[in-house]
Amino acid sequence: MSGNIENKGLLIVLSGSSGVGKDVIMQRTIERQPSLKRVITYCADRGPRPGEIDGIHYHFISEDKFDEMILNGEFIEFNKTPGIIKGTARGDLEEALSGEKVIWRIDPDRASGVKNYLAQTGAENLVPLTRTIYLGVPTIRELWRRINERKSSESKEKRVKRLRFDWETWNEQRDRFDIMIMNETGKIEETVDQILEFIDKESKTACLPESRNLPFTNN
Image (cartoon, rainbow, N blue to C red; front, side, top):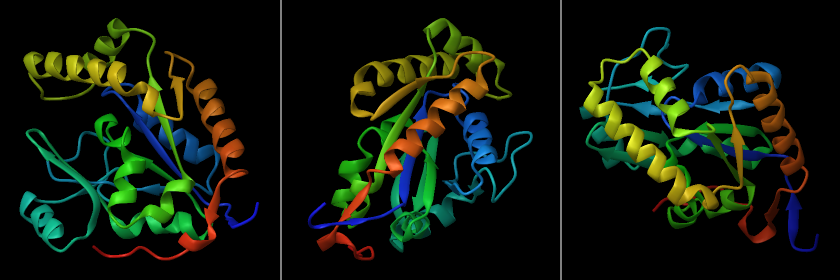
């Protein structure tokens, strides 16, 4: 392909509604393909849930530390809105440029426009290596069941608001993802099969434009 450089690296963005099973699917995907490297999100809106480990599931930090990282320009993207304070460190994504397959789990409102965002924040060289996956469930009733099964201190009112927001986000933004994969109850391995098949196919076609095979620029 003239003007392009073959690159076996890939940045896989995995997203989906709350309670859809993103963490479980992501962990199982990495177990089955250990060469995948997980991008760990910084989280300042809550502490660890039962079973979560700092530095593995999230980097749990204080809001003051989060604000300091924003001021220092350490995040490639972040979301600081009521109830959500999460961000991704710029350096954690660079491995895709050196040929690594990197998997990044973020919320759907951030994931749907991630390619445009990367292009606007000095990381445009990652755009041709980025593929987005939306993990879904078949019905809103099933999504509500899963949200209620999560071990969370959220009130019912907050859970209802989250359900409405997630379902509306899905319906508004699903066409902005490269692929939608349904995570049906009791079919984890089938879901992972589809993800790995997609990663394998896309890693064979991802190329870097020669003029953009450069490190990140700092804005």
